[in-house]
Length: 448
Image (tube, rainbow, N blue to C red; front, side, top):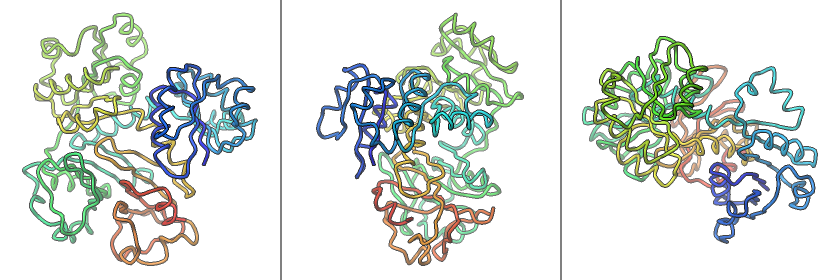
């Protein structure tokens, strides 16, 4: 597949590097600033850098955009992204995707309008990050939490504490429980992620990814040894777009405080936030200010400034002050493993979240949704099973599934089931697939 990316900012650069590491993909990266594409001249990355204007028909034509399978516009300019997608579509590109920053564009009445213009899909990284934060606050004992299959199946990442009844037991000893209540699909131990087998045991501080039905969420919490926390008060550090979108998503019976250092931004925020949100001018890194604003009676602290370093330190301070739920925006990918090891709480990276929405278009199979782990390494995919798919040829236990792939659950006729060894998938099923490092061809061969 030929992928043409315009905009070599943080998102575009991360996406280009990610795709270049996968097989059978040609990656072109265009930006008007030559310094931003300079890194791509490293031959090991297999990225073709182009200095040019993505809204110039002549320059796009010169770059060979007509032969592109997937055109991704992620420049800082929303209008430039939409315009370049329109041009690329008219020039014969098979699929276009634009990064936008206006949430109204996602309203059902407007989506057909943009499709008609030639924008096949849009992505709003800040809104996606805010949704992930909101989902996590609904289950404060999780490190990551996703609702799949329209909310029918849940995937929770949680740390195993010393109170977990699963400690020291081989997973095969939990087989009856797994089949009845939940399915452990991945374990993150230190910096290593792996698909567990029957002889594996759980250790304190492991992070487990668990699939379960709605009625068994509390069972998963208990078996991870996590206490029950009800989030009623939230303090947000930084008045970023992610902070604003998160505050808008939180229910009105939840008390929210946004602490922002910039006075003018405080005034702007106070005009657009909901009635349950109080905007405070100050520095949330100041412990005295946090204490005076009731941090000790707060259940969640969200560090959402533009600085990964400040966010990490602030959440560690909040942990020290006894906050049960902390979230840090860590945009520096090099810090993700360190942040996880420090135990600062939940980690949000909008580049990874946005990339997961785009990566699913690279496969030959029908992936209805995709998410990427911020903790450890791996992708969570919702794959629709098609007629004649290899995955339907035998029970799961008899198929040659790569060790780095595991199946968590599946949706059939509106009902959700956990995958077991005797499960036989059928065309039309949607299955939860966890992939650590299987190649595109391995994944496509299994489901094509």
